[in-house]
Length: 550
Image (cartoon, rainbow, N blue to C red; front, side):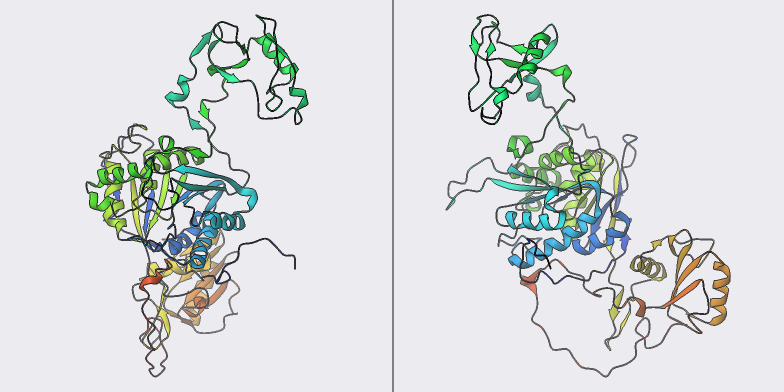
């Protein structure tokens, strides 16, 4: 077997067998504007409450290949536990936590999508290698250095940290970055004008030596003095001699206001730019992408409470997310954040006309994120990037929570259908587990979902007899097939060519880890293991009452 370069850690081979849960909507926690502000208002955004690994798994069936941009700000594993995150997870466990999430995120991304991860020095370099494994080294785009602070901590014991990393990966080579919109500062550089238009002088040399590019080392004649101008041997001209002569003929050379400059410059005309944007770079100053102090003030202002804002030690400013979404998405694209924190990604995406999905497991989903989003939607939030994008409000979001595990153990240790599930939830859950799209058909009671135009699924807690199965087979007819999921059935499973019969819950027992609700790895709060009580075994029914339902 051919060896490969990879990062290894304790427990790397252990992978969770995730249950693809269904999502349950809650209209009382959902919110939308009272009226449309523009025709482009977006209402179908998703705020999901629950464990973010299970929530990512829940999104996989519907959203694989549909997310354009993912921004995540995961726990940094610094050893200082956050209020809402376990931020002191042991190194190996942290890597497993990230690997499991990254693999699903990669599947959710569209072919032209990208992932942006903020991280500090503690795990950045390990995370880079891990991302290389998941996404492929060829899909690494950049390590952006973001200056998160503008004031030096003079009491720091070693070297004061002033930056975070922003690791950027693409899903494939189909990803194309956008240019950053031009700023007033950039436009002010175009302060010279001639008969052709407004221009700025651009450096006529490049960072190549004469040994590297001998054809770019030649003399240029100063037209007003006749002097021969040579470039440095370590920094030759940017253009070949033929290109230079063409620039001279077309009037693109600038020798200063008086025409007596010692070195030539290239006239970069504003109206001849291929676009009006600026190429993104890997160094983002706090003036360029804001800073954490501004982020705390933004949260404090929108929530009207310093105590709520102070719950987040390292919030990300709206200006940082704005830069990410400018480069990695366009209006109408779908943006995902599975570590929503105080909800900045959703707030910024909403103001910028992107669709969004956010996932948050902490109670601050209700105390922080929902109040913040309501103010964004109502137009009350005029902080952050609101004025820059002329935000007036509008749109809305739907609130969802993860359904409980489909199966639970009864008091005798038998796996049975969770009592919280009604018939509709059960049908939706079985559809998801079996790879069917849940789509009940009012005209045909037995069509709960489909995998193709001719392949359907029927979920029931009944025990079906031979006559009922015959009636089903007749209705399905030739050229179509039906997966029947029931508590039990009477007769031969091979009797009907167009029916496939499976028993609930036996059919799904081996598919997942049932009853596992927390993949957040909050290891500090784990209780000591208790010895289980031993009770006499007893056969469990579908819902744990010892009997099969009629």
